[in-house]
Length: 188
Image (cartoon, rainbow, N blue to C red; front, top):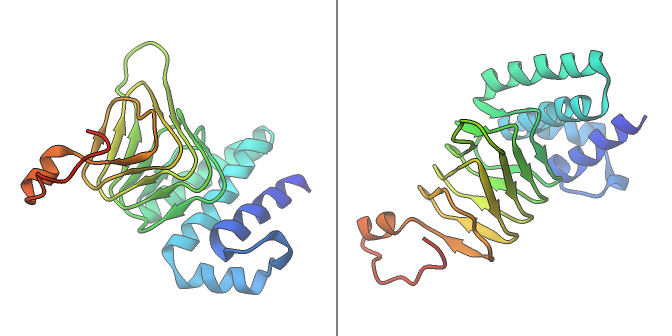
């Protein structure tokens, strides 16, 4: 029964936008049918909880389900990744999150984003704090990277180093290309 309660909690927070007391199958179904974003979140959280809390039988089923929804919605969040509650996907298109990612609560991600590793040998760990947003076409690539809480990674920004403090981080070249060279930056 705890697996069901975990799924229900994720669905309440991420799809219904309400507390667990206000759970309604009818409203969940309406939101699920209305939007690909909510449909993906529904199936992803089902696979996520089955993989995290189930035995071998449920882990296999979760892997098959995750592969199916990855193909259908063009979003690949690997089941080894840890994603806190409050996941928000703007547009389910071209999003890839590696199994080494440890993501906190209230993570927001737009289309075309990647959270991945460079490869090779050695330690692999990507830690993303609470209340982090990855804007359109941004990438977090590296073997050991840490991003603190309350960070916004701007559009088309590559993050390959730690971000130790809150703020907005953008690529300087993107700003210069669009004529914003005089804007003060929180990061690089």
